[in-house]
Image (cartoon, rainbow over all chains, first blue to last red):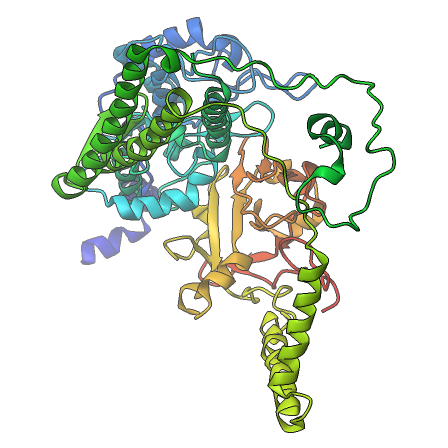
Length: 267
Length: 358
């Protein structure tokens, strides 16, 4: 104790104290700070390979450093900045064939997938290395297994049904954009869409719809695909327009056919 | 039917049976100008079944077959009602996945009624007599004797009931009949009462927390990331007795934009760091406006495509809505949760006669 007290005034004591303080702060930060979002399996080789793929396939719209392209004089952006969109965003857009976009338009439609799983993972690793963002969910996270479909239905009707239709059949938005049907979307892509908000879709982060609730929503979508339609053909679950069209063409057509037969003379 | 046709088919009007002497005569009836030749009925053509016994037998078998199909349909209905499990799903081409029992019930009953109908029509068309017959309509006015008789019977009945001689019965009967109409008029009161100021007010009060729908969880500022949408209700709405009525007025959409994208200073002042809250009830006819596009910041109503621009205080940029969506002023309480800083400053939802006169 006395030895420590005696060296208290040593000229190097201050330096030592500052070094200790910095060390403690750094250790505390690395323990408490939010984890940079990147898949556990990414390596520097993946990131380098991803960057190569990015420069060859994406940079023409999203810029050489994924910073996005400036808007033209009508305010149209060729490609938005990808800094901070996260691996989940890349996995969704590339994994469903929406990116790379074949031609400019109001919306990137679901299309043939251009990259295999490895290339998609490399692209995702590169974009995730730019800034933290939503991660690709694990198979366990993005599955409806164990979810409460009834609860998911309630959440779906409040948060999703106004665009995607009560049965997930999709619907129109403004100026040529649309919410796609969810008939064939994989659980992983449903999860990623909620987490990242692709294109026109808003973001539903983990505070808005918690991971358990996301599971419930996926369970609901999967259960509603299996549900038989007690009333016969659902006509795509699109509501009164196809129903009216069917009634007018098939129903009234059959009535006209019957009337013509009633009025004709027998041979 | 024109008079000309009568004149030429069966002579003059006066020859028709049952016609009273004072029936009105139309001038020129008897001497109708023959501008158009009455073509009359075409010669009767016999059907195959009328002349050929083989064809008749064939038609008979066809009708019997149609009725048999109807019998089979009804039997399918009856059997599937009792023997088929109501929950068994089945895939039917062109219809998709449906319930087997429902499908068989519909098919059976449909065939049951449809084949009775076409069986009967086929029977009538092929086998029942089809000779053309003209049947004249009788004159609609009754004879003078019948009319006088009716008046007499009415007068006699009135006299025999003695209503003229018994004023007590006359008065009470009239009173009873007259009073019986009153309940129908009194019941009109149930059309009211008038809504008062209930259409102008919502549950929102200053300091009331915004909670998410349907979880009713309070929302922190940092939870609302840019591009997020929260469907919001006032705190405690799940505990009020008229929950649905309140929900229909108080529903709010919470969005976070980059503050640089917001053009309206009022919108910025009533929001919090780019977080803005707008009524979810369309000002056109009150549908829930929930289709927010996070890149264009368009807010679309699914019913009639009214489109609101969230960067310009939810101004209407397309569709039949007339007024912008009302904004809910919000702020943050000491615990960091989003709260309303005042109620709505105007009535939410579509127009109504008393709007603005509360």
